[in-house]
Image (tube, rainbow, N blue to C red):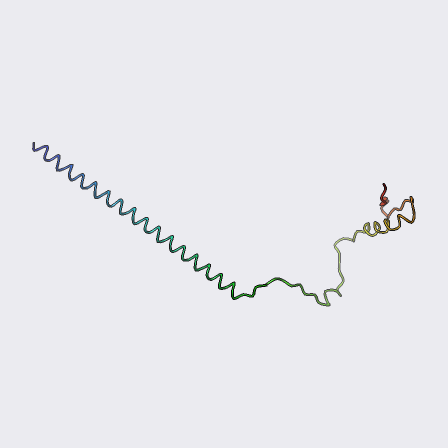
Length: 120
């Protein structure tokens, strides 16, 4: 009998200790959730504040800030140096097309020996 009383007291104490541990565990979970929610709210407030600042900045700035090219006389008076000599075939192509009708079937070749006439 005595043994049963002691055993029931121990299980009662164990049961109380387990309940206290569970309560502390759930209290910790609640505090973590509250901390997480507070942090989310802080981040949302910061984002909203940044958006408000951006809107204010946009309103203060003029609407069109596009680059408008400007030319000066010096831009056109300087000598231009090319990296390599310009292609002359385009000039001879134009000459070939315009003179092709006048000369008929004659072969006109530029300095490279390539026939640039259109043939049908």
